[in-house]
Amino acid sequence: MVAGEHAPSGGRKWIKTAVYAGLIILLFLLPLFVDSVYYLHTFIITLIYTIAACSLRTILISGQISIAHAAFMGLGAYVSSILSGELNWTPWLTILLGGVSAMVVGVLAGYPLTRVRAIYFSMVSLFVGLAIVALIGVFQKYTGGDIGLIGIPPLPPITIPGLPAINFISSKIPYYYFFLLLTVFSLMILHSLENSRIGMSWKAIAQSYLVASSVGINEAGFRVLAFAVGCFFAGIAGAGYAHYNMVLTRSSFGFLSSVNLLIYVLVGGAGSFFGPIIGTTVLVIVPEIFRWLKTFAPFVFGGIMLLVVFFMPQGIAGLFEQVKTKLLQFQEEKTPRDVS
Image (cartoon, rainbow, N blue to C red; front, side, top):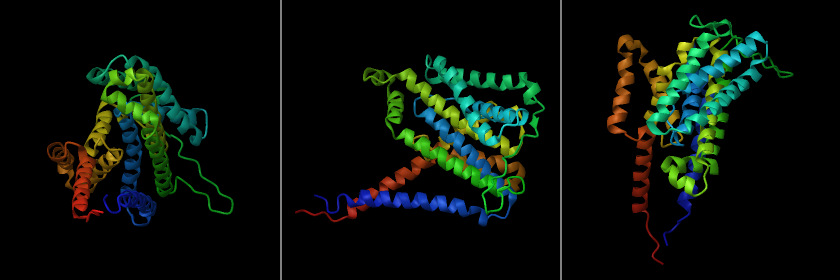
């Protein structure tokens, strides 16, 4: 028997919980140390794309590679903007409805998509994304078409009795905290789903849909569910972005934007839940830090991608996992064994 056999596992779990809590506290304190409005804007954009990238990974773990995710962000963004602008509904409701609308379209598109797999799924999803962006242009009376949609209502003030109203127009700090809470809440749901029986079924289908079907897993149903969940949170992210930016153009949700989301996931590491978080943070924030290089800034983005492709095939999170495994092996080798 190894001395203290169960202690390391419990100790590591406690350390992991402490690290997560520390990161959340650090993120809540971040505005106290950031004086630049531009950097705060960058952090907000990072949070928005973190939700989108993590929801895309939910689709990926079921064995599906979607190249339409940004289009579903756009769908949620335009639905929320039109409902709040044309019908004067509160954005607190329309953001949720933006996510629901993206989910409904995801379900409708998901069933035909279950008939194809691998590269064919990606190709069909690309056409779905292009169709959504094209439809945004068709209904230009409501969407603004190529000119864009302007004058989108911001988030309304939050009033708490006895406290000053939280105004989203006068400062970006309330938006930062809103998106931080939205990100934490979204990731908690996605993480819970992944570690539930639903998530296990998704992963089983990705490993072998034939084996999964043979043990009673409804392949088509679970694939549609993964696509619907991913689209819902993409719609939520897009709707939140609309009421933050207050201006929308359909070019922001085209093919290249979907590819960027996929890159965030792959660079961070699709094999880890935290991969998209790492990938989005690195690929959004780091190029902005080197923005002073101007024309050379894109080379920073490209350099990061090349480093990951050649030296970290499992993504940045995969490298961390390898280092952690090596450290644990080293620790076990140094731990004295009880021979009794």
